[in-house]
Image 1 (cartoon, rainbow, N blue to C red):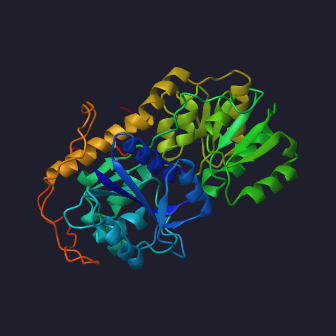
Image 2 (tube, rainbow, N blue to C red):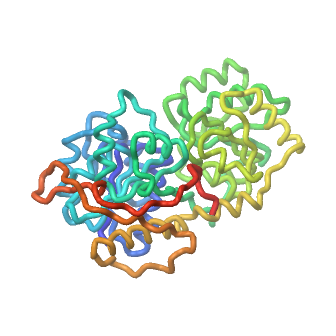
Image 3 (cartoon, rainbow, N blue to C red):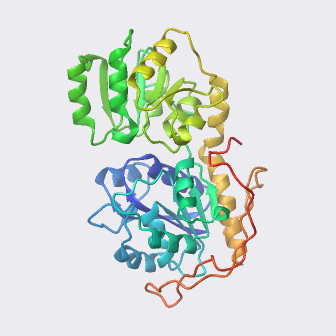
Length: 406
């Protein structure tokens, strides 16, 4: 199966890592994977290369995560012409791919986070792109609610799943074990500034490892000095294997302001490390059932109180429940979901997958019935994509906006 993965903007981030891990896992099963991007940072390109993957970039002058770029769509057209299936991540990518792919080629989209539009919401463009997609995988409840409010058909939305890193050969990179760890982008939405404020309030302060990079780093270093905690905080930078830094820690802290899910939290659970995080979006569900400890967002005082209680042994998480949950998000388990979706889409189009499917998991969802398609503007080939929205679609049963605990 010749599959092309298109990403709006490539940078070191959870959504990009999810697409990368999925592509690598499917490649191990015999799928021919090609990666394309609208825009990219040097660190993003290097991230892919560190996993042995080359990515071809359109080289837009701006971030195309949210942008509708006609030039990107034209650039994609010849690169998608021989694909069996296209999977595009981020709105700017699936908008362009839906216009560029041949009519006979299924196009699947993914949204990994809630929308934070930099300007006015392009409602018309979004709706027309939704009409041209075959399916859209959504990670987290807020993005799902946003899409439904904008007119998305519930039947074509599917629960997205992200794969965490394999932990089979992980050896802790840090000692002592009595330390806290944060692993993620140093960005406002991830709340690392809130963690520093909470850390300064702790009655007992073990070392804190801040694993990651991002635009807030200079501000965070300054704030650590102002709070008098700079000697207790290690800014470790971006690490290809954050599991080595999380392993063996007293706790992994996920203080996000926005988080559709959290690869860091689930990775920590897989490693048997207690997780303290904020009750926001899909992260609240990840922490439920005593898998983690949830605190209110934007509240350093409460975060400090819960961390103190954990460090003093007054509260605990259910580490075994966390491990069971995390086991559902290995690269192989996540690849099962997407592999079977791709095969069913191709079979619905009368195509033949390039490899035989594995046994279908019992939890695998049925695909919606596809109707006729409306005509879309042609891009650079004579056969334009059309929309699937004008035909009759079998109604889908109501589904929870949260990530399913299956």
